[in-house]
Image 1 (cartoon, rainbow, N blue to C red):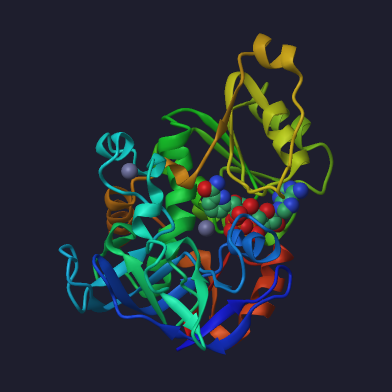
Image 2: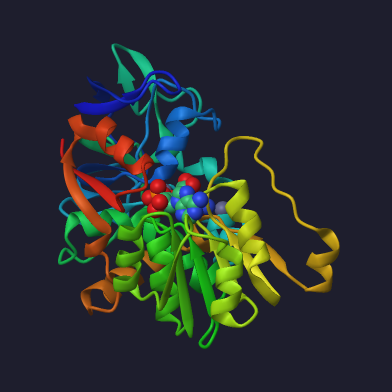
Length: 362
Ligand code: PAD
Ligand code: ZN
Ligand code: ZN
């Protein structure tokens, strides 16, 4: 099958023919219909985050079940599904408490050492990264990392549910716990940040300030529910947010992964506010915070992973909101491309000009 293979960090994606195994145990073979270009995959393709080439990335996957392993109970051939990089065992203390995103045995959804690899090239193993490996015609995914959804949700919109939406909306709703009447700022309005805006709107935030360097993104954020917007390239962002809110926001979300914007997020909080950090930093990235200001002003810094989502509960929930017309997913989709165009599409994402680009031709 055709797949976009990362052969070296920083070397881009090579479109190649590779082999995919038949499903074992609880694995499901998915005929991939849409695969979203999350910024995280660009980080993973350029830097060593513990996944080594040759590898197939891609973790915003939707498609149709083509075959199931002998122990699969939850899915049947023909089901429409969404995949997620959240790996969970279903049996540890965290999983049993519903916090599957904190699973203590996430490797349970991968093949064990000694088993044949899911992906290979001329007999050599190719890493099926994150257990999803969605930048390919087909994907072999453990049933815990898959969720069945209503076939009425189009595949491109369904794919974004797998990361951008659960991460962004989940950050506002679950990880930060924004409530009705809160003031919110979102720094970085890409595929994830726009979903933070949606989550804040859903729970009734009083004001949602969108912050980005691109005016097109600020305009888009307005459609998603931002009530105010600030171009970060024009003047002092923190001063502007403080002025708009009369002293700072209850919640600031950093959705880029830069030291400067993390420090801005903490600085723009009102007393007692929470800064939620979503953007992924280069390995070893750090930031500084004045300790006495933090304690005197009772500020909280909240590290957010996948929006603290429970994918089996949250993906069908967001899908139903979309079908009811209460959650915009379609305006996230900037364009649908062919697998062959993945390198140029990632170059465009890097420039900050597009929200989500989705591969729909393989
Ligand atoms: P994206 O590239 O679509 O969006 C980033 C946005 O930030 C763009 O709109 C840029 O214009 C904007 N931007 C860049 N610099 C600045 C600046 N200085 N001030 C204001 N705006 C700026 O990325 P994305 O939405 O796909 O992902 C955002 C980050 O979230 C990225 O680092 C990704 O790896 C991370 C992520 N984290 C998790 C998690 O669980 N923590 C999950 C998914 C994605
Ligand atoms: Zn992602
Ligand atoms: Zn577990």
